[in-house]
Length: 119
Image 1 (cartoon, one colour):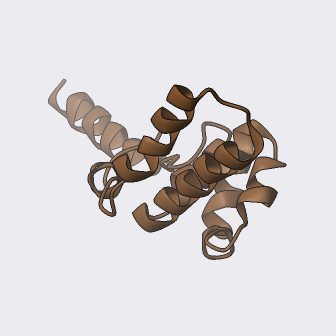
Image 2: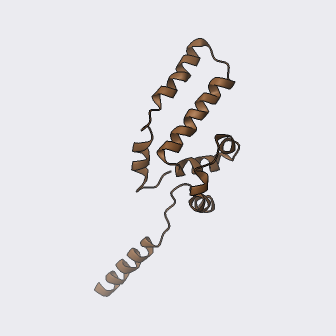
């Protein structure tokens, strides 16, 4: 019985260490793609990102560092201010989001996610 338990424990530990961790997407293909192209994705434009499939957008966004995440959101908000019609109060509220996204806004999120699954 002791030999069986030792063998079972060994198999359990060995197989649990071999599992790949999905950092960016539940879809293994997409996760691998983003992992392999993470350096290129740093330079994707907001227009290209927005024209991509939503699942890809989410995975790509998860791969960004804190600076890129902030940049994407600032560009998105600025685009909304330029293209949408808002009342004076709505415009002021949306514009206030620009100040809310301070320089270190996503740093804590990225620090938390660096050792854990990101989704």
